[in-house]
Amino acid sequence: MTRALVFGGARSGKSAYAEQLAAASGKEVVYIATAAAGDAEMAERIAHHRAQRPAHWRTVEEPMALAAVLAAWRAPQRLVLVDCLTLWLSNLMFSDGTQYPEVGSIDLPARFHQERTALLSELTVDRGDVVLVSNEVGMGIIPWGAISRSYVDEAGRLNQAVAATCDRVAFVAAGLPLVLKGA
Image 1 (cartoon, rainbow, N blue to C red):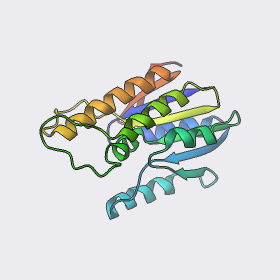
Image 2 (cartoon, rainbow, N blue to C red):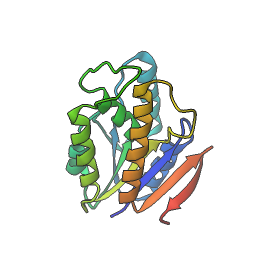
Image 3 (tube, one colour):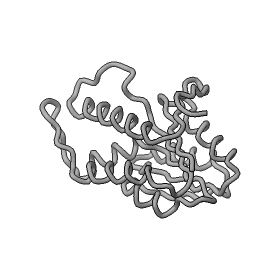
Image 4 (tube, rainbow, N blue to C red):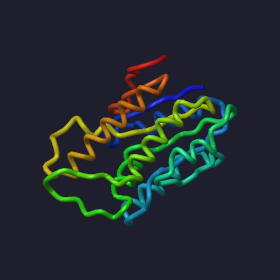
């Protein structure tokens, strides 16, 4: 079983690289999309991603219950590609409709903690290959608002925790992968 994390900045080529890994596996591919079309611009992005994928790949859309859907679809003959963890993280942070303050401490929803724990646990189980895509959001200016800082912190923590469970980790910039862990 192979677990891989592919991460990078916006429009870095991380999704394309992850899709290349999936296609090269020679296995049946199940693509788990975590995005939800909340507006026309996001719907357009989702349509673009769909059009780029091979038609024979199965797509499963799941914005929050990622561990459960991974457990259902991972199998030895299959590679599951998850795109992307940071959208999933955002979905969870706002899952209960909380309006976060600009300053002060942030209490994230219980579902956030439950789903994060479940994902990290699922990644330790030997069910089949998985490639996870995530954004690197911590390399720029520190955000002004409390919720933005919390998001950057949680994304960094998530990437570290997922990378620790993975056999391979690649950082992608300008379409070029830099393998940080594994072959």
